[in-house]
Image (tube, rainbow, N blue to C red; front, side):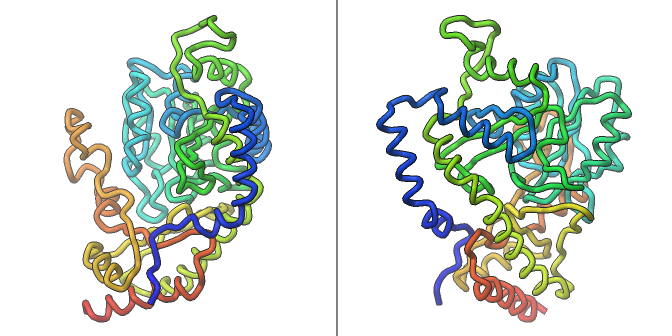
Length: 371
């Protein structure tokens, strides 16, 4: 029986192969690889796609979060509210500004940051809220936006995993003042290498970030501020422009895969699925399930030729990098249960329904055998 890999780009890349090769040839022959017309074109296209006023291409998703925070004045002595359950890049970006990440527990049903607990974490030093739309699911943005407004806090969305998602008809990555996207190859909109973007409605943030990403310069050899080097290159921008028109179709295919998983697994008592918020449109960058004895299930699926992964086995506050914070195991039990019990199943545009059924059949077979 054919293997089912955890992730495959083959179906997507077959659709765009000729367009991608043409885009590569054009950039190659032009011999301009940094801050050229292809980047400008993609930035305009991506801003229009999201509904934001301005887009700025940067080197990667972590840089996007960092620059967004920096442009909003977050720095030394400030606190930024972050999810306890997230990838460590979210926290690293906050630390890079000189601010302190303040974790908030995950909601036991949605697995996103618990909006009802955010207010309890606010102190006089709190300057921003940084929600993360994990797995292509959607945080409770109306509630979080209301809290931010009430307490006069800025908001930066980590939208690395949810390009194309929305809630109440408004795309994720446009609710905050300045928001971060990742184009890592496996994301819903992926480059052929690292890449990221910032989307904002603030022309001031946009202009400042435009200089900051390029050594603090918008005019060659004139440096207005102490900037960094974080630029989405021309080749990646050109390839992203090729992919962008397909994104809605690919996200719909992800949703169809997720729908099939949900139909086949929702009655399985041992399998827990996240609650999807009303009026939200998730895009399922990943499809994790919550189940006991995760590693045993992974071994069973591997023997059946089915790939899986874990996102994420160790919360940031339990990583050695953050041991100085003194946040011990048991501090965030919901987050720790997710870290211990989530396993991500295969999901990508083009995954066949028969393969999804096979994955679910193997999960049920393992449960019966275990019991």
